[in-house]
Image (cartoon, rainbow, N blue to C red; front, side, top):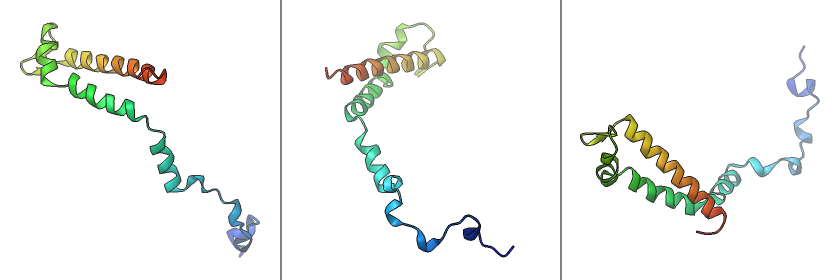
Length: 103
C-alpha cells in the first residue's frame, strides 16, 4: 500500500517525453487563435447598428409610432422586443452579406 500514484499508473516522471506534449492548449496559442478568428467587419457593424437601434432618436422617431411600445421616455416590453428583433434581423442580413463578400 506504499505504492505511489505514479507507480500504480505505470508513469515515470523521468520518462515523460517533452516532444509529445501538446502545445495547442497553451494560453497564448488559444488567445491568438480566438482573436484571429474574429470577424471585425461584423463586430464594427454590430456596434454601429446597436448604437442606432437602441438610441433615443430611434425610440422617439420609430418606436413611438407603434402603439404601446413606448411609455414616456422608455420602451415597454413590446418596444424592447421590437428593438431586439430588428437588431437580430439586421445582423443576420449583415452576416450573410459579409460571408458572400458583398460588404
